[in-house]
Length: 380
Image (cartoon, rainbow, N blue to C red; front, side, top):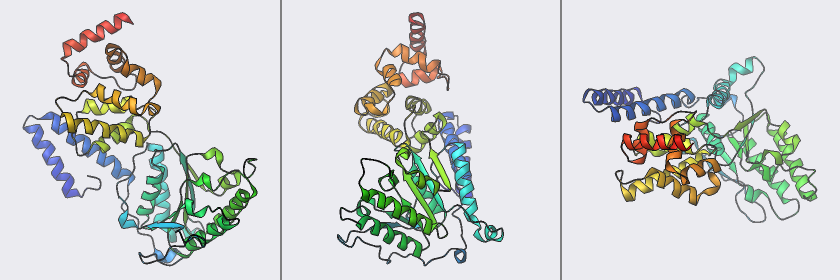
């Protein structure tokens, strides 16, 4: 369902309808959720763009193309990812980010039409945000949608201990990217583009930043360059000005966390209440952290089975092993009195949990949950 054909979608819809007719609403609801999620992804993900190659300067990259290397160590300065190696499934973001990315791709759809108005699509894009929010995956997906190879700079090779070599390596990398039709990705961009006025840095860093600025300018009319950083505050102000697009990727909100939980849960058909709880408890978490929690859940299923799993124990286990990734408020609720946690879930402002859902989460009957809620209210 990542990129379903019409026939596949109709078959899934028929199965959903058959399950409803047979009196199995739970499975039917799960299929309906999958269909809705796939439809949301499809809205963001146009089919891979067909760009007129005559509008793009440069030669065609092939698997046999030799990547540039550091002259002293012979280590590659980049690696190449071809479109066929890139997953077509669109990353999940909120409406604003989704619309911005869609707009960028549409501007690349018809370069010749833009050229008639003497304009071009954005050639530089800086993506920044917390680690684990999907920045690198987004950049890779964009290259795949543009049907262009992705040249990923190896910054560990670019930065050399030899005086002047780092600047030379940057020039060599950009010359290679400018020669071919491709997307150039500068991941961990802050390690190159540090502030030139930082008193802790030596003159070599200033030369590296100057070389980077000059090469960004030389590439502005050639192809798309994407920079990624987890630390935007470290970037030189002159570097910021070189990027036409400056896209901040935020931590996912509740709706996106629920979508991510469903996506990471595959192929397991976990109860909807379990997925909602995992999304609710991961407030402030990144996509990578949510994926780690879902893996913990799936391991518990593998060893204990769906009948024996205690979801709250799973989350306590995760919070113990990843204490820095969970908010103090949510940890206090999970490790505290269960009645208080149930009351917080039952009265949550961002989506209340019903008594039936709480019973499913705790493995108790609804009357027991109702008594726990009443006791928690009296204590409160």
